[in-house]
Image (tube, rainbow, N blue to C red; front, side, top):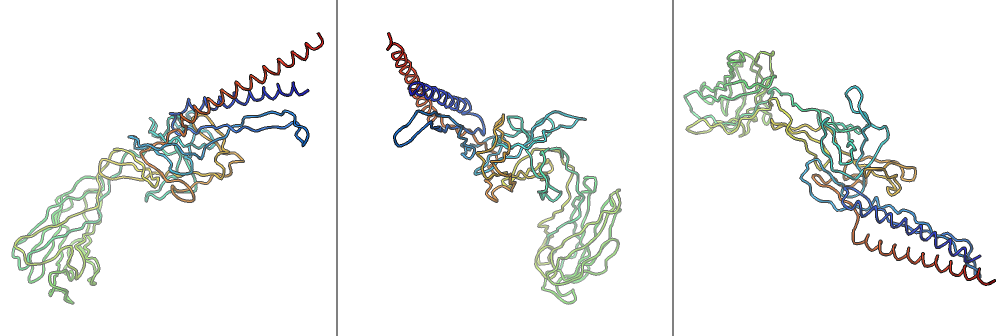
Length: 430
């Protein structure tokens, strides 16, 4: 009978509005949760019978309407490891499950999240506030990512090994017509990262020719000499004041062939106790007024002296660049890229399965996961030192709350009215 159907329909309305109220409650409770995605309500009607002449009461069901593609507000953070995605995509993360043999073990399943409030834990992993570990592509020595596999990012390279000096650049002007020897004491790094003194001495040796002597007290004394020819002293001659060629090399010194425009390089080696250390001295270019020159001047002027050696470095900090590179900074001024943070996208991200801690897992309906560099192949741009907040609008949720409350009350009125009408029907026989 229609009265019973009306009561049944009203009860389904009560259940639907109760679910809608639950969605609102969950949204409001997580309005300050990093990376949280609100759940809206989609009401679906079911019919019992509906024709041109008859319509019988059916029912209503409240289904969740997920908003995984709706971004929250991105705000700046003082944490250099925090990240937010401006656009579509998710961070790939792993869930720690314990430890074995002193190593952290992870759940074999793959998880995704928009919660980018990452920080280093005591083991060096980048963990967000919900306990998920950030994953990325490991980088090789050159900083290039290996895109064939994704794995948890761990900051474990806390020491930057020293790099021995192999290349030296020198820019100076030798006074034309000078009669006195001049020298430049400088230091280089050996293979252990220790500073070693070296002296570069210039002695005039006839018109437009200077003899360079390279020596080191800990490298074996004098390493050799070589004549540096300028302008008309070279064969063939070059513009006055520029290096034209080398001659009369002794010891470990050897000069490069003189071709106009090529680098004016002198190779030599020194033994600081760890075996011969090969080095190259760059004096500029043949026939070009750069590097070492010989022009009229009263004094010997060194404009620049640079070398590529690096001392031992200790961990200073870690940061993330806009292209997703995770770089460790050391107190010797060097940095090393250890990984790159990719962004994963889906064809239907609203169909992902929700999990605890603002995490998601792939489903058949969501489609396959596509992992790409930030800002490529439809993936969003990476915002460093930022976090994405919840996409919940409190004002909108309060409006939904009022509507759900009024609709729930209205359904109770239907139940009450139907009950009274049934009671009247029963009382008809009295």
